[in-house]
Amino acid sequence: MRHSNWRGCSLAVLFVVTLPLHRTAPGADQLFSRIAFGSCCKQDQPAPIFDAIVDSRPDLFLMIGDNIYGDTEDMDVLWAKYQLLAGQPGFQRLRQACPILATWDDHDYGRNDAGREYARKAASQRLFLDFFGVPKDGPRRSRLGVYSAHVLGPPGRRVQIVLLDTRYFRSPLKRGSSEAEPGEGFSGVYRPVTDPETTMLGGEQWAWLEDQLKRPAELRIIASSIQVLPDEHGWEKWGNFPHERKRLLRVIAKTDAAGVLFISGDRHLAEQMRIEPDASGVDYRLFEVTSSSLNRPSGRRTKAGTRFGNELNRYRVGLTYFDINFGMIRVDWAPADPVVRLQVCDAKGDVVLQQRMRLSQLQPGGQ
Image 1 (cartoon, rainbow, N blue to C red):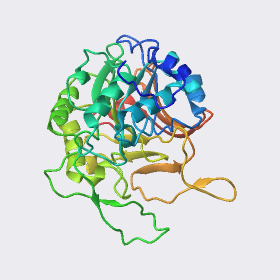
Image 2 (image 1 turned 30 degrees about the horizontal axis):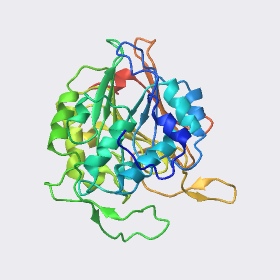
Image 3 (image 1 turned 60 degrees about the vertical axis):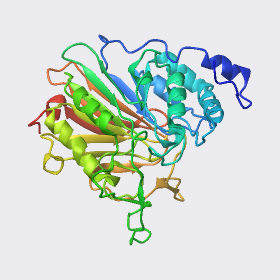
Image 4 (image 1 turned 120 degrees about the horizontal axis):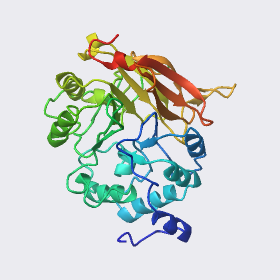
C-alpha cells in the first residue's frame, strides 16, 4: 500500500481500510426501491446519522461530495482523513449493509471551492478511487475525473445512477458583491460567469453524459455535488455558469431522457425544488433534492432551538431544513404506474420533506 505516512492514524483505523468498501457490488438484476444519499461529513466528528441510514434499509447509498474535509495539497494528510471516515463505526456498518457509490465535491477534492486549477487533482483522484474500492481495471482508472454511471435493476424497472464530477474540469469562479442587505434573502460571494468558453464538466465529460442519457432506463438519478436549479444565492451552483446549466437541460431534452431526478449536496441545508417545462425546456417537470449535512448542521439557532436561515429560491417546494439529514428516493414499483417519493430524513430517519409523483409524470408530456 503506497500511502505510507499515516500522520498518527491508529492501527484500528489501518485495519479497517484493508476491508472491502462494501459487502457486495450493486446487482444488475436486483430491484432498487430505496436509494439513500448524503453529503458533507466531518470525518473527525461523530456521525450517528449513519445508524439511521442503515435502519432505513437502503438498497444503495450515494456519497455525493464533501465525503471528508481534506483541504490540503499533502496527499498523506488527505489519505489520513479518509481513514478517519473509515474508522467511523456507523460508516463501517453502512458499508456492510449496502453498496456505496460516490463522487466528490471541493473538500474531498482537496481545496475549498476549487476547480481545474487545483494542482493535486490527479493524485487526489487516485486516493478517491482507492478509498471507494474502484476496480483497478475500471474506466475511471484510465480517464481524468471521477464521474461514472451505472444502470441497475431488471428491465422495466431500471434505475440509472449518473455521478457527475463538477470539480476536475470546472473553470474558475467569479467573485462579486451584492447590493442586498441582511435579511433580504440574498447571500454568497459568487456571481454568474458570462464567458461561453468557460465550463462546468469539460468536453469529454459532456460527450460522455450525452451518451449515457441515451441508454435505456425508467428512472435516472443525476447526482451533482452542487445545486443545479437555484438562481438567487451566491454560493457554488450551476447557476454560476448559466450557459452550462442551459446546456445540461438541453442535453436532457435532446436525448429524450425520461425519468430524470437531480440530487445535490454541498449547502449544509436540505430543500426540495421543482422547475416547470416552460422554464427548463424539458417536456416534463424536473425535480431536485438537496441533502446536506450528515453531521455538520447550519443555520441560526432561535431561542426555541430551531435552526433558521432566510434564502430566496424561486424553485423551492416547502421549507428549508437546516439540521443534519440524509436524502432518500423511494420507489414503489408494484403499481402499473410506479410511485416515486423524494425525501429528506432527519437524524432519526423520520421524513421531514417530501415530494411525491408517479413515474409517468417524469416522461415527456407528463403532468
